Amino acid sequence: MATLLSLGVDLGILIELDQLDCAPWWLAGNSITPIAVGTRVSIGFSNPGCRSSLAIVMRCQRTATGFGSDRYRVAVRFASDSLV
Image (cartoon, rainbow, N blue to C red; front, side, top):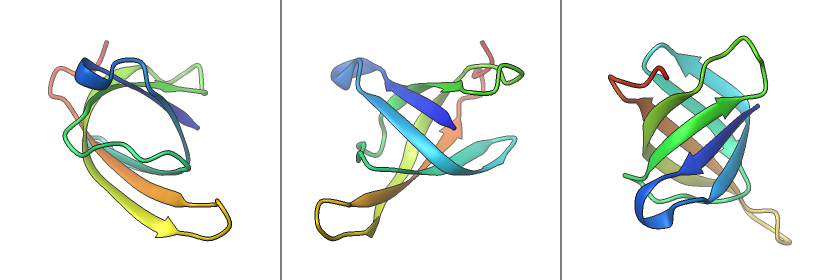
């Protein structure tokens, strides 16, 4: 599980991601909350062995709908200065 905290204009919006896929330069996961492409975020992880980082939202695509259960696939690219 990962938590995105939006920075900048939409400061303070929290988005939980589950079903994570990742590589050293990106992270993707599912959320019930959409987020705008281009938003700069801080990422925290439920695993205490993972370090927080900074990233930019590259994609937010609706994957499922119905009866208030919209889901979104969110992908972020880690910033080159991302490790905090």
